[in-house]
Structures are given as C-alpha cells and as structure tokens.
Length: 115
Length: 112
Image (cartoon, rainbow over all chains, first blue to last red; front, side, top):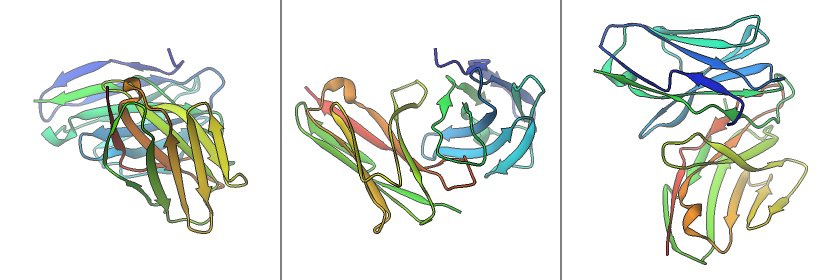
C-alpha cells in the first residue's frame, strides 16, 4: 500500500456519461497530481493541486475538471465521456509545491472503460 | 515547457546482462530526475532519483548518471533478473514547479 488511495479501481460507463474519480493523498502530502495513461501515450499530466489550490495544468480537456478539498482529497470529474477517454487514471501525491525535486507516490489507479 | 525523450521504447536482454535506458530533456533549468518502474497492471513506483548537483547515484544493481551539459541522464541495471521486466519511465522537473514531465517509457524484457 503506497498510502495514496484511489477509488474506484474499475469503472465502466457509457459514452456521454459523467464520472467522478477520487483520490486521497499520502498523509502529510499537500500536492495532488492527476495523470492519464493510455496504451501508447505514456503518462500524460492533467492537473495539479496544492493545498486546495490549482497550481498547474497540463493537457486536460475542457470536459474534465478537478478540485482539492480542505481535507486534501481530490476528485477528477470527467463529463461527456467519449470512447477515447478510456484509460488508466492515476493520482499521485508529494509534499512539495514550488521547490521542486520531490518524487511522487502513485495510487493504484482507476481503470475507466467507456463503452 | 519541459520535454523528455526516452530511448529505446523496447529493450530485450538475457538474464545477467546489463540494460541501459537513456533520456534527454530540453529545459536546462531542470534539476530533479527520478526513474519509475511500472509492472503490468500496477502503479509506477520510484526506484531511484538524482539531483542536478550529483553526477551519479547507485543503489545495489541500479545506477543513474546525469550529464547536465548534454542534458541527458541514463538508468543502468546490472545483472538483470526476470523480475526486472517492466516498463521504466524517466522524468524531469524544474525549480519552481513540482510537476514531473515523463518520458514515454521503455519496456524491458529480461529472458531467463
């Protein structure tokens, strides 16, 4: 157990639907990162939150949004789902925000299948 | 933004051989370079990292080297074992940002 908890582990939904992925960071970590992993795309950065505030955005679609709550857990919302959104979504956490140089701890991921 | 290139995409070796995976980065300000191992169906796990003020770091059979001038860093695995088979990702981050930019990964296959 890495200490980063992601739920659910698997999600199957239809096109056009909306889903919410949840992540609880490792105790003491203030930053949460969301990554999308497709078969041929490696680990694509979506968004980062630090202590409740959005800090960096990657290639996140407008149909996707995220937030980090006061207890530091984070949710990634995916709406108007398309077949191409099927992927493994990882949450990771780290202590730092601006100093850089911190390794991430990844959760076990949520496998999303859009049918 | 930072761009990380990783080679090769696939690497097959015999058990006991050495394996080398290379990465290049674009932002000369990058100062932190971790490597992650991802086994099939599992989460990426940090196996070793190096900072820009160090040229080499070793941890048992794993070593990482950094050439700041050439902006490249490499992962070296010696005496490979079948359990080393996995996808390995390199990454880089710059001061002021804790976001990691990952390479596309190398699938390492170690045959008994």
